[in-house]
Image (cartoon, rainbow, N blue to C red; front, side):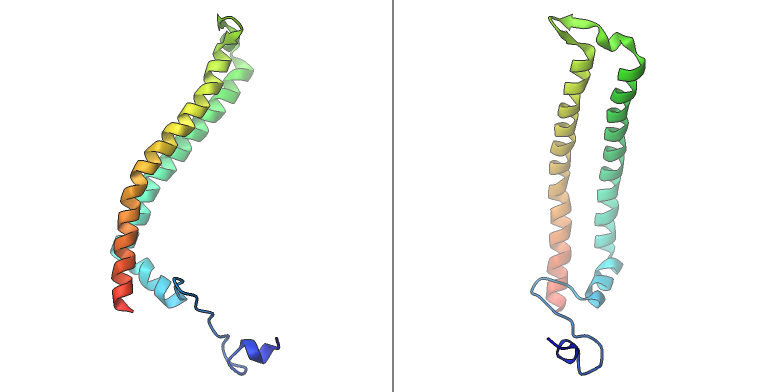
Length: 122
């Protein structure tokens, strides 16, 4: 395909508008929308602290393995505290995922209301 076929005869490139995709102007309108700003803020209020908590939890385990010998204390058979802490990483990840899934229903409601409001304008 030559250059002129993709542009408006030497003018600005034509926007390939696919169903469901927003133009730059429409995205700017969404970004100014108060409900959208509320949605982004609400997601940040959950995602940022949850991520920080999990990273601290994860790296605490790594640091503790290197510096604290009590993790080698056997609890029963050949299972020690390091094994228990390592397994707790899985439970922590699942817990955060479950909490996010519960919060996501609220995020979806806000996103749907924004989408409905914008679809009525066009």
